[in-house]
Each structure stands twice: as structure tokens, then as C-alpha cells.
Length: 115
Image (tube, rainbow, N blue to C red):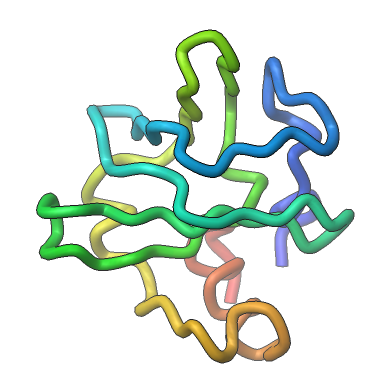
């Protein structure tokens, strides 16, 4: 996996321990949903984004390394991926996202450009 893919280190405005639940999520080309769940674990950070009606209520897993900016005033998170990249991401697996290294490798590979 790409180094830093699961950390918020590159996110402008992110404060360690911030609760991002409920924040709007903006891709490089528009709104994609809201943060339904997130974790701040070092080396294992991620967002689960509820896309609502945009892609038929699908939830997607975004590694913390995709977050470029957080604005607590606007309650908005920006990610460095397009709507299509998010839409075409691996299927979110509620059971495997936290504990299955192979699944995390698949997701990290998709967003990091490595397999």
C-alpha cells in the first residue's frame, strides 16, 4: 500500500481526534455524501461515507489519506478523488473493513494506485 494511505497527516485543518461524523464530503468535482463513521487510529484511519441517493444509498470506504482538507466551521471534508473514482471503488464490506488485511489492501491499492 502507499505510505500514508491510512493516515490523516496530509489533511489541512484536521485536528487529531476530531469527530468527523456527519460532515459533508466533497470530491474534486462535487458533493458525494456525508461521513457516517470514521476512525482516527494511527495507520488505520478511514471514513465510511453514505452517498445517499447519489449512487443509490451505497456506502464507501475512503482511506484517511484521501482527505485533503477539513473545515470544522463548514463541517466539510474534501477528498482528492473524483466522483467517478469514488463511485467505482471496491464494494464496502461492513464485516471486513476493520479486521481483514486483504480487504484493506484491496481498498488501499485502489485509492493508492498500487495492488
